[in-house]
Image (cartoon, rainbow, N blue to C red; front, side, top):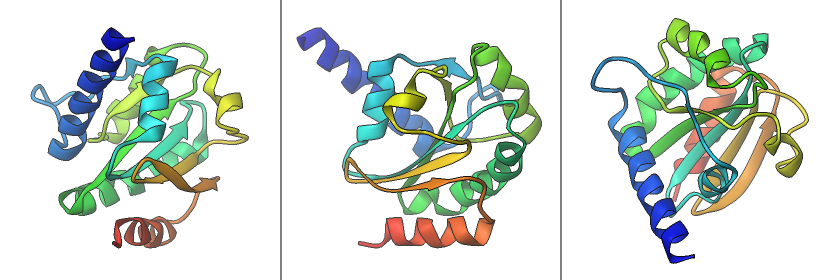
Length: 159
């Protein structure tokens, strides 16, 4: 149990460093696999403001929404916003990597596979979870405009 807590704390610190720094040293943003426990940690967040989006490589609305989320992340990350995408593709991280590369996403993208869809009641993609201080405050299903997402982000960042 103690080992699991330490591992999850280290994963949270790495995630925080990536989401606040934005970008990667080699210019690439690798899609990496995360365990169910690590996904739970992302969903529970910490004492911050997080936007977690469930996506899939085959999802056309996801491909349309992700660039808007990327712009919003770049605009609001210095105000404390972190953005993370989680791929629900059945074919592993490799399925989402071309999308991340094509769209030049700067926020972390993880792969968890399709299993979390049931646990988190994800009935469609994209699904955006707005997480404030460790609690999901809103879940938005389906593609939304950049203006709509920006208003949600402003509300999330408000004290």
